[in-house]
Amino acid sequence: MPTAMDLDELYHASYRRLVVQIYAICGDLAAAEDAVQDAFVTALRKESQFARVSNPEAWVRTVALNGVRHGWRHASVVRRYQAKVPGPQGSVDVGPEHVAIVAALEELDAGQREAVVLHYLADLAVADVAAQLGVPEGTVKSRLARARDRLADLLDDTGDDKEELRHV
Image 1 (cartoon, rainbow, N blue to C red):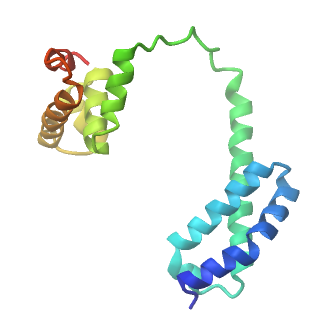
Image 2 (cartoon, rainbow, N blue to C red; image 1 turned 90 degrees about the horizontal axis):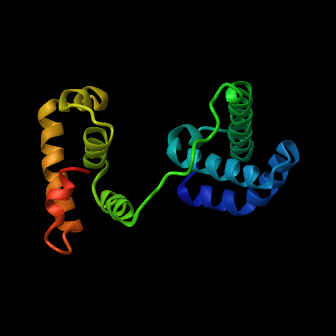
């Protein structure tokens, strides 16, 4: 059964070789590096499955190549439908207040951040936020209350921002 140390040894012994092989297949060095890195992450994530393979390097190569193929399929779909997507609109005006709010949102946990964005920016009712997140309405209300308190502390440099926060 391979251990984390075995995976570390495999990484050091085969990373460059695997990148060269995947690069030769896909023709994109950055994509090859990403695919091999992702394959090693998958090996860590699927430790019990990886422990049973007879040729770990071949397994990592197969996972990396599957990742590259997935990228090709995705790019093909994008190319097929891209012409039907309207072109870009004018640039979005992002003022310093918006940058400060986004920075403060990054300080919240993911659940609170999602609730705030869906409720205040997407203008969804609490019931709709709950349905979209798959949580009870009470959970959404709790997340919003805690998020408002936290954001008020983060954004309150003059004492006047607490009311502005309610109108995010």
